[in-house]
Image 1: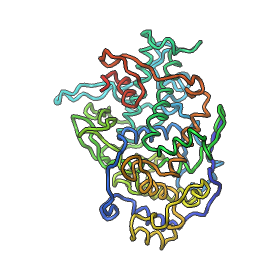
Image 2 (image 1 turned 90 degrees about the vertical axis):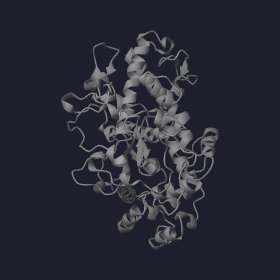
Image 3 (image 1 turned 30 degrees about the horizontal axis):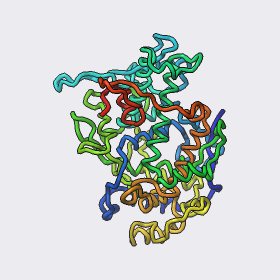
Image 4 (image 1 turned 45 degrees about the horizontal axis):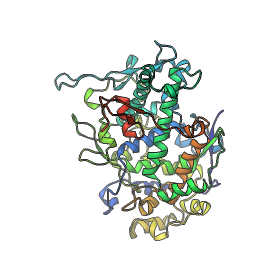
Length: 474
């Protein structure tokens, strides 16, 4: 079934003057004159969850509409991915229809092909199987968007490794009670990879980025707006989610990351792809393998944490090169916030205030829309104080009302939380293959791995990575 997009709150709504949107975009670059004393670092998520968000976005939706055609009706805009959290972006169409991704030496126990990193002999850093398989220099993966930058690419590698480790575990006699009748080892391993992934989204990812009271309300009373039936083949994801609410991650990207013990801190610009998709490239140097401890720890001097959710985007994220954009272009793209604001206006998204009225959520006051008097005056003079672009509104709402423990900006606010949680939970709840619909009592596997003698449950992103790489889970 071909899937498209939909509108959660009706419309289309009137857009904004595009000159004003470009001006607003420039005020979203995270430079001192725009920051103006904004605080940083509340109770923030490890950065691994920021990139898990980008990864699952690529799993759910693939809109190939170019900016110049963004006014197309969402109901007639194709989503090239099934709106399921089913790792389609990893498995492609499976061993038979996407054969180049797989090692077929054991039929029914297919594993992913992996490439080896380039050893650095002088530094005594050995080669490891932590790269994409690169015949003729071209990286092979089901969704080339997951090769936009090093951290996302390394997360994709983790999922390939998890599947391969699960195949080996099953072949060794593990998880016998998990196999379904007539399931091949490949099919069991794939299903368990998907179920552990869904578990992490439901029980970890959402708890970092959604207001606790919104999650509790949905769990108690169900969704208000996004209500697919159990087992329904969801035909459309709402554009309020795909084009605004789930783009909150853009503001959480750090300007630099502590990658590993060899290279330490690297600027974001040094991590993004410089060549176009499918263009031949060199193997990943061995000193560029991401140390996932530094992206999943909730403490420690080497840990990487998300930036606050607010209307600011780091400079290197603001000016991404063309090769790192989801839709490749030969010309230099506009700034990322400008593209997001223009696309939202052209497609007819509601303003933040209109969405609040439709969702019966108390909107921010006009005095809260801008960070200070200067921000409010800028928005007021352009008619965006009472009719604020939805994406910008949701980032500002998070900055004011996204309080998990200490201060705003730790998670999404009431409207953003509800849109994101209802869509992600709705997608999973409607999926007949989701673990709760197949076996409500299922829990992540408890296994011995990584040189530890103690069985560990693979119930977190941190342990998911540790199992995938067969390393001791701290």
